[in-house]
Length: 559
Ligand code: ATP
Ligand code: MG
Figure 1 (cartoon, protein in one colour):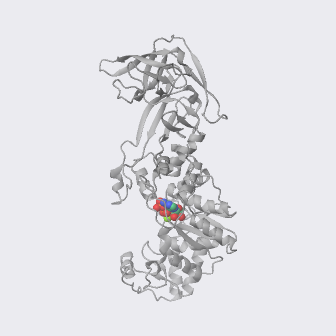
Figure 2 (cartoon, protein in one colour):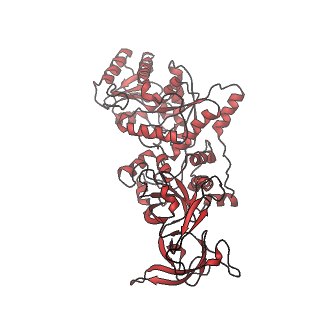
């Protein structure tokens, strides 16, 4: 199989390499700055692989910094989950976990500094008024009537905002930049808002919280970040990012570089929308195996290596590349599991087969390789008896011409075993097929009978030794490529009603010892992973990670 895919270009990596070669960059320090208001998703994985990857590549450091300036939406549980996800993806941050809130004292001092320099003021306009004063893309804004307050008054008001003397929304602190700037971000942006909320790190110490813009660049500067890598929506914020660095006595001058965010078809990559799915009970929590969250993909059976591989395959550009095909992601996991997952037989939709010419007490045990190409994997013991399970889909009473599996009077090979022929179809009163009576050709173990063409090979499980397992057949959560393309909540109308189908299956006995997160190829069916929460000895639960068909590899071959 030719599944090895090459890496796509990464312009930031190239740029840094050039800087280092030209002696313009010394130590590379990056950061991954999640807001702890939800679980990380596949889009964040792109940013994690990029930031941690750059640090690894160039012998630098990558920090993990929680961007925790909005206590209303943040939770410790999200912080814990994010740390676990970054570790699981295979990355280690340099030093302690950092928080933007670690710098609240310094940021406050810098706000006072701007006031003293005549570059910030407390504004009493209401949010509506402020919007009106701000102007539009085509019209300049107007100065607030509070713009010319004295330094003393501003310092006093800010301090009183800090200790909680004013109600939320009553006042804000703004930078005094340029109300006529063509860039709306420069029209006196907000630096502090009043919020009477308890913060997960700083408790009740603060009644005001800094804005993202006033926090991010300065946090970068405090930490000595060399390259502050973010997504393209921050491009218009870059002048402001630089304005703060140029107007404050910051210790270092980081550089902001933007790249295009990842959008995947059939997938939502917005924490807010994913949270809605969780809150409405549409999925079973943030780590539901249908969720594009890192923890959901993990539970589904994705490996960290496959997600890293995918992030390498998609590359990093400044051009908004549109939608990435999810087939590329499933290709990455499939090629990993193809190589590394042991094989097993599992019958998803069991139909009983009685082998009429096999004695009741007959037993053979086949020694079958754990993996066709991997001698390091243990051999499986596969027992064969008079009664077996096969998949209902592998039998047809009235087969079309090209059906090479089992049918009345037809022969098929049992994988790793004999050729059998179907002699009789047994039905119940309703006409439902309940079992098949077949006979074994004992001359056929490991070889095809002379003069006969037995094309089909099917998987099977001994009925005596088969292990009942719950199998969760997961599929895309959405039926359309861009579930949130139109209206904001439209995505709920595009849910796939068959995104989860649960069945009782029969597995070969080698699966009985499967531990949480053990992954297998169920031969002829797909790749499966024992659920890390629900699966336990004697009560195994397998999640379908991905099917066998690789549409991406096909597209690549054609192209
Ligand atoms: P969301 O819209 O899902 O809430 P966000 O950007 O608000 O995402 P943050 O926690 O602020 O979430 O993101 C942390 C980092 O991950 C940021 O640097 C952000 O740019 C990056 N990131 C978020 N989504 C994507 C994506 N789809 N592709 C690439 N990077 C992303
Ligand atoms: Mg954000």
